[in-house]
Image (cartoon, rainbow, N blue to C red):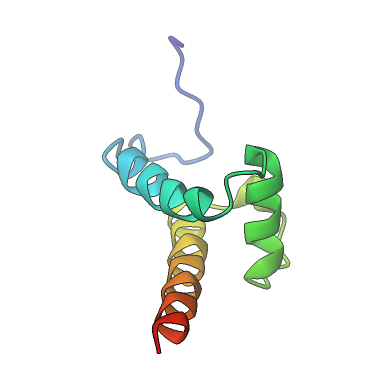
Length: 82
């Protein structure tokens, strides 16, 4: 993995984002563990209503989608405990 590919002309993306995004992905995936990873990612994009091509999403956009899913999961849990 020697070369770093980026479409940005400035510095490399912050690698500290990786465990943050993966942690949020884990929270969502553990709720529906029967899905394969690509099924999960495709469903997240569709579930949150985003219509842009996910190939071009920056990680902060995926993080926003995951936050939305986590909020819906938490809302569902709160309703079940009432």
